[in-house]
Length: 389
Image 1 (cartoon, helix red, strand yellow):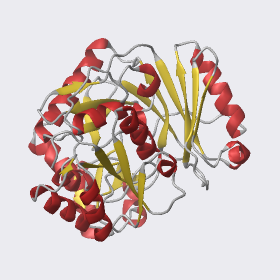
Image 2 (cartoon, helix red, strand yellow):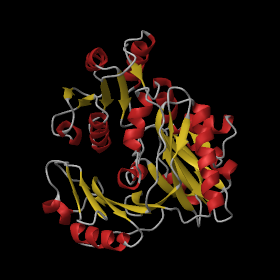
Image 3 (cartoon, one colour):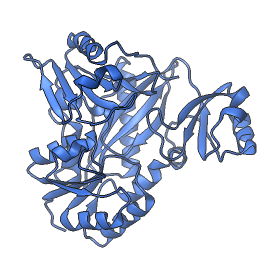
Image 4 (cartoon, one colour):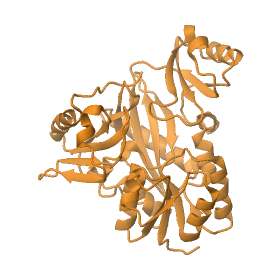
C-alpha cells in the first residue's frame, strides 16, 4: 500500500457518501464508490462508480485493487463482505477504516451494549431477548419497568426496528426476533457528540449538539448548536465520547449519541461508526466539516481542529407528498445571499414517507426561524419537533 492515499473507496452511495466524495475531491484525492445502481446521490460526485450489490465479494476485490483506503457510509454491512475486507487489510492490499471488526461489533446493538457495559461506560440497563415468551418474561421481570423500548439487534435505524412497548402487553406486541429491551425514559434530552480519531491515536471532538426527533418517524428532525444543556454537562458528554472512541481504538469519525435524564445523568444510547446526520451542520458551522475530518483521519493526514465558527441549526427534509415537485433529481446545494440559509437536496429519485430527501442549515440564532418557515413551505406544512418517547 502507498503511504499517501490517492484513491478513497466508499461502500455505499447515499447522501453521506455524496458529501464524503466532495471532501475527497477538495482534499486532492480521487473517490471510488460501491453503488447498487447509477441513480444514487453519490454517483453524481464520485470519480469512479462500481455497480454491484453491497454483498458482492468480487466488487469488493475490485475496489481493493484500485483504492488505497476503503471506508463506509453505513454500518449495515454484510458479514461476508466485512470478512473479505479484513482479509484484504491483513494482506496489506488496502487500508480499511473504521476497521472491519469494529463495524462487526457495533452493528449488532446487543454486542454494542455488552461492550459498553464491559468498558464501564454509562448506558441504560438492558436485557437481550430471542423473541420467545420465556425470554420476554425474564427480561421484563429483570427490568421492572412499565414501559420499555425494544430495539432490533441488527438492521434498525431511525423509525426502523425501534418501538415503545407497554410491559403489560409486551408478550403480544413485542417483535419475535433477536432484540434488546431497555427502560423507556421520560423527560429526557438527546445529545450527540462527533468524535474523530486518526491513525496515530490522536482524538478530537466537536461540541455537543442537541437532537430533536420527529415523533411520526422516530427520526432526527432538528440538530442545533450550541446545546441547551449546561457547559458542564456538554463538556462531560465530550469527555465520555472521546474516552469511548479511544477505548474502541477506531479510526475515522464516529457519532456518540446520549440520553440526558432530568436528573442530569448521561447514558450512551449508541455509537455510529461513520459520519452522521447530527454532524451535517458542521459543513457550514465549522472550518473543518465532519466529512473533511473523516477523510483526513483515514488518509493519514491526522485529526484536525474543527474550528467552530458560528451557532447553527440543521433541519431535515423528510419526504412528504407535498414536496414532490421541489425535489430535484440531482444533488443541489443553494444558499441565500447573506449565507445564513443553506439548502441541500440529495437528488434522490424516489420518495417514501419519512425518507431524508435533504436538509436546511441555518447559521446564526436569528436564522433558525427563517429555516423553519422555508421547510414548512417545502413540505406543505410544519413538521413536529417533539422528542422521541
